[in-house]
Length: 629
Image (cartoon, rainbow, N blue to C red; front, side, top):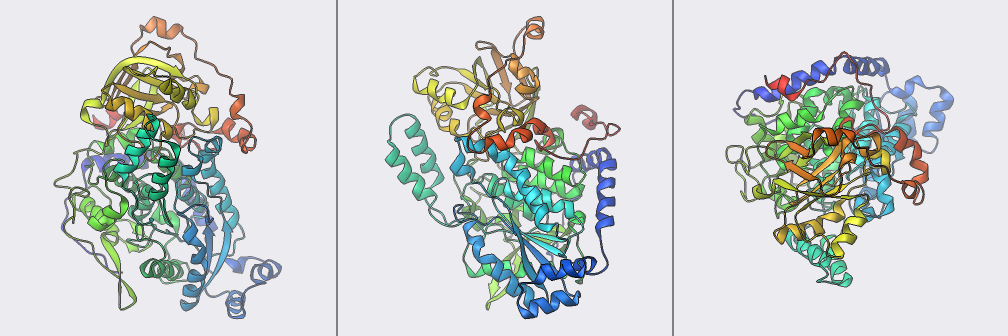
């Protein structure tokens, strides 16, 4: 692969400053991680370290030629970890991938084995249902499942087949425990465009208002989600795919090629051949630990901000970083957001879908613009080779042969994708809010300027269904801030509260000042209603959000980063944090199996993981004011 070089400005001082503070903060934990990686490395094939009995088990059922290669212990063995299931539209295409990969590996003189599967639940199916309370922790189960798949110790490189919300972060967290192994992520691509996002949102809102029946809603949803591939809005799943590009873990341009096409199949086969090349038995050894460093994490945050990506990644990127010994906090996101321009308008931050984004120039155009604007670390290691400029290229088939060419120099549609010199917004639209309610994040890239400051009385709820019940009773036809408590990771697993969006959007459209404040999550589809989410500490841990009472005036000021209950200090200090009977969240739909997960979950700003590296007390996190001083 040949990187396309361009003239670019020096790296932005804020990007440099944030990277430097992350490196300093992470020195002890990153050093310890890299020492573990170095200890795990081997000079020969990994399977050469296991006993003859172990090895015989590992190749017992292989075809004769593959068995011969595995016996000789000279050529690489590639482990396939897959999230295939045929209920998820995004993962159904993965059924075909192992055979494509195995065939390509043989052509490269290597062997590929299916190492293991990981669970893959669909947030689209569980949204608003009890099963959604397993969603966030499924990421950590996926990480552990990935580790189990690789624990046999016979692989020299890894291909991770996954797409959706918790699946890609979970696979990456798991793979990072085997950081000595080269790892490439292999996506399936988005489904073709169906019902427009604007029409879908309109019909959902009309249903919430009682103007359409369930049959009409189901018909619309079926036209939106109609075939194989990722849902086409820019939620967490598609944010995952862009992050894998900009962090150097895909083959360039892989993210948004639709499933079951010749180009998609060619990319899948090429990933296997590239994995053999970058194994320690190949020509360009590129371990995962060398790809995911502090600069790659900063690049991921910049890419998230520049494209208006999912708020879920203010949790996932932190958890991924911790798995590599890197300590990131929300102030890092906030600082970067102040200088990273918004280059894309993809639903819910616009009306276009990811297919439109891809056609306008896609990931390659966006990455080149950010590099040339000095907003990315270009001098990084990737699975495609040294230097992020590889990812300014896009794949093509020329006479049935896969090749890469430069992405378009100009956007094909500036209503969807713009150059850094003419962005939709000068900042990334993701902010940290601070005040007597704690710390939270808010995504404002889709929130109109007139709605970014809300000062209104609180209405306290303990469940999202209570909000919807009040809406249906007509009790919310006024200015208010919905305070939804006990939605954090320790309370109930931190389910997304996305089903509140149509109701709150309807009230906002009627002219009411409305906002959501919660210690829970919203979703990758967070949209036009201001939502202060991930409020930390969560209510169950005594977080001050639990001191809010119905009728308190709340100030949510996304312009100045303020989240305050306007209550006299003495009164505020005297209040007892709310309590709630959470027994209904403990059982049913498998929730009883996750009691220990809820009990051990870290805070949202620590990645909400049930495991993770410990923060070294000597590496104190600086405040935003200290960094910018």
